[in-house]
Length: 435
Image (cartoon, rainbow, N blue to C red):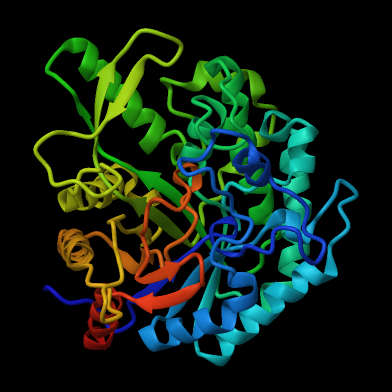
């Protein structure tokens, strides 16, 4: 088979800090990304998410684009510091009101929200209290989850707790490339791993409805045939592809890393973490080449040679997505819930031409090849239920600022003008054809 079943879920994805803007409005307080982006030299173009795509004020226009696209579901995140603006834990009515309006607009257009509680934007007040290095942050996250669920749960089709724990742990707390910009020794950063997973497990207990885990995956290739590079690639595979999956699905940490994590684990913790969800989200972008290095982090991740590259420099390797899906299917067998591709997309240097169009044929090819890779995994027996493109809009791309464009819709950040790209029409047609 080359097509997709009629009940396959088609969607697009976004994250609060990357699109909302309104950073200082209606009671929202800073997140770690506000603090980080405002520090000198942290983003490629010196930009911040203060305005981003102004989705906070323009969500009706953006939902209309989604309706035109014909998607079934919009995967969004909510801003913790917009909803719980200080350490008192008291909810901010104005922040909840915004998400009320957004979810009502989605419902009016027949679009089911897939709501993620945390996409890297920890409130600065929580970071000031120790952030994810502190066990108490997991408890505060569960309190936040309860507030969101009580107010929005009647309209949420699918919940998820924390997006891409590996990236937030590694880039935010080990390499310092992302907020909060820490460079912790692995022995300390291991506490971040456990507290993220513990927070997710506690939140899962209070969320009512269908639950989806979300983890990023990337096949790891040794950079050379040397024993050192093979060992480095094996270690990276454990870090990226198992560290945040084994505890949830199997109830244990990978043996290779258990000695690092064990000092932070208390009796009963793994029972909380081991809460297999109804669906398992897979974020996939590329494959990685891994080289052994000296130092506190004994490896370096590179783009493999011999592949086309996106504007990010990432290898275009759709076969890696098939590999990820079939590996999960084989590695976790009966423990694995049905899968959903919760992020897949690419950055290219898209521009609007004199006629007002934006012809991003490279993205069309990328998405078409990756959907074929999903179908190949399904043909091999993998249960895949849906696919979300990252992203609907060009947006604030973390440390890259506004220099990388992933959207199906071009955003002119000076005017906030939205221009659907060629890929937008292609995806709309692909969704329609599947029905």
